[in-house]
Amino acid sequence: MYRKFAALGIVLSLLFPIAVKASEEVYLGGDSIGIEVSYDGVMVSGTYSIKVNGELYDPKDHGIAIGDIIVAVNNVPITSMKELYQEVSKFQAPINEVPLTLRHNQKEMNVTLTTLYSTADQMFQSGLYIKDNITGVGTMTFYNPGNHTFGALGHEIMDSDLKMIADVHKGSIYPAEVTSITRAQDQVPGEKHASIDFDTKLGDIKENSNLGIYGTYNQMAQEQPISIPWASQAEVKEGKAQIYTVLNGSDIQSYEITITKLHHQNSMDVKGIEFVVSDPKLLEQTNGIIQGMSGSPIVQDGKLIGAITHVITSDPISGYGVYIEWMLEKADQYK
Image 1 (tube, rainbow, N blue to C red):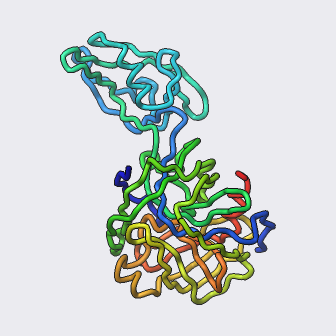
Image 2: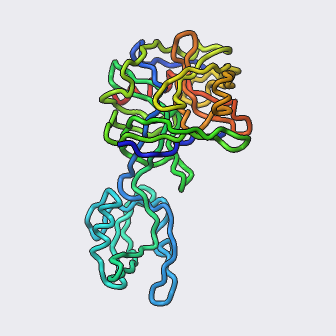
């Protein structure tokens, strides 16, 4: 069953390549994928005040901070919001003192959470905003048939509440279909809108890194994938290239870009390739690079050379890409 989700954002915005143990050829991506990653517990994303015995109570003043991971309620381990609600709902006095175990700055600590329970409504108040996963849409860069690994997105999944890379430990990828496009504007990034088929898992995410998401796949979203050789950064040159992405449904199309500058690197970095969109068809539909396009593979002279990672919001036809050899090396760790 497909459910609608917004795109995971493109991140807004040195000399010789090292050996990569990837297959000489990989399957070209470009397909939109649904991405769901989970915290190792339930994360506190915010707090609010509740009135207890006539006084305001806010969990942040009682040892609970935004970014803390709740790992147990009354010594019962929990891994999801559903499990947390089940345990907290067992405390049904009008005012309750609920023992929590938190992971705070990588260390476990015990605190007490005050909750209110309404018998009439069968509801409780905790003063906490929580979440147990992040879901969005991005673009697959490649599938490696040599070891059944994949690389996608080209940059990290950010936690929008913490403004930092999401500390997630597992996840899955699913087929997605683009349903509509919001065009980019000056200082306002555009966006793909898509629905995700959560009934069909394509693979497992093993790492969320600053170079993208990586893991192993069981099947591909494409029925007839294209096998393509990849190029080291030494082979990449300024000039014409193509990106592959989806703007409607699941139809992968190629669009022309112009590589304007190359940064030769001896360590992994996401801003190796500078480019501008030069394809009038793409500009007409999106007005440049939009969120959900991150991870779109870049091809030059018939070889996979990189993936889109960043857009320059003040000039949305301009962006950055990561060299594919860095992504292949990352993926090779999970074979």
